[in-house]
Image (cartoon, rainbow, N blue to C red; front, side):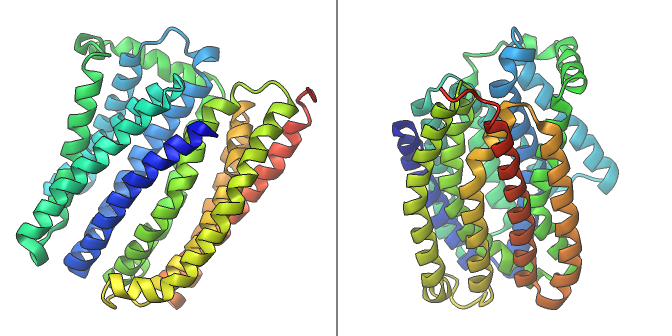
Length: 400
């Protein structure tokens, strides 16, 4: 509980800073620029979160069983190679790399390696250092963006914010990893290939696809709004998603601690002890979220100056999705303990298909509100089915 509170408190400060920046971006960016920024972040998150979440779970869950002896350099180099392949694919698709494309790639590099740096300390259960990295990232991004906003005000552009975002993360990562890796080891391509073979031959190939489609599911609403609606609806959803991301900081904090801790449990008593602590958090979390959803009727119009009236309804729907995610999140970590990645992969594929169908129907009818409803249903289905699977695995543990 102490580790969770520590991570949560640092995350709270970090997300408050990011949240303040989000409010300023909503105020000072034109709708077209904010839509571009939202769409760019969606592409960034699909690639960066897939890489960071996959390698986080491999490094924490599967290191002792399948990847023991592999150096940190090899994991970093493998991710860098994948990002390079993505950049080549992006170049082939667009036939050019403009400033936004370049900054998308840079931000992907920044997020991926910052998250893996945090993962190194997470596996060591060094949550103090883990949290310090997040604070350093937020403070630097906050300070530079505030200076930029008050300098140019309503001339704020998406590329300027992406430049600050990517450069601060890369600088922090290089500063920390400089003493932990050797640059020459990053050229050992045989190590990357061996890690790839180990992943493909084992159950971790399903983990990669599970993380990939989980990330796609989390960004599918933005992508489909881009192509099924207009920039205004996309900007509306993006503004509501900013507020919603503040709710997810609690979920991130819990998962940061529970993922490595759950891997070490030996019996039902230890597992139920973790669940009981989580249940106490629910008693606090759910009323706060419901209160926030109610207050949104008055607070959000003040923040965005009435630019996005539908953002209130979108945020309220996403708030219920946050509750479902928080309730069921420890059970996903428990299923991963048993390396039941094939089940998780099948569930997320079904959720993506359901989300696509619902978005095709509801976005043309209800715009951003329809996208939020589709997200709520898809995530609710996936989370509940994972909970049922976790209950089956719980029965396989000895009582004490």
